Length: 248
Ligand code: PGA
Image (tube, rainbow, N blue to C red; front, side):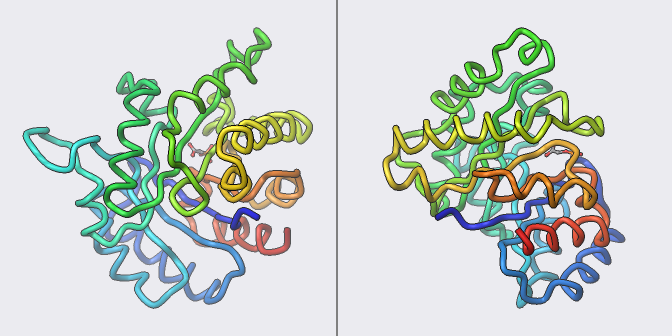
């Protein structure tokens, strides 16, 4: 059985003042029955990790370089994120794929770097609106999974996040049947390729998850949690999503 995870991705948002949200979140959810992760911008990672010490909240990075160190101005490595107190790293977010031209092979290399640093990779996949309208959703997601998830993935080192690109930050969400179809197909491919380990990898849904739609989404089979952008910035909103996952 996959563990449940509520993961927040702050993207390029948050300053020192935002840490107050984490204090409030930790206070409201001292002992959740699911994993809780916040991925702040790299500038806040170590301060957030200090703030969450002794709480149920884990911290993580939003991206990393595939190398462990070297002449890569502006980049950070998985080792650095581990050193700052991170436990997870998001790789292959659609904004990285689109804004930085990251390929499936890049994402597989980053995933191996995450594992080498002893951390958990949150590997993102998802189709664009044009791909969905062309009836290619399952094929696109299958191709991204095959190319981005390296051999050796298991429930301890890997989380999959299905995020339709057109649902991210738009307020648009697929129907529950559409989410169910993609998650069932992902689960099927993971178990075909990885055997029992494929059942242990959490599959998160991401894209406009809010407290008001989280209960319905979490009732869908093979949805083991959420990767949340906008609604993870406020303790009250993210707390509502955590509470829904606890009820699921
Ligand atoms: P959103 O972002 O919740 O703001 O739609 C989700 C994501 O990009 O992970």
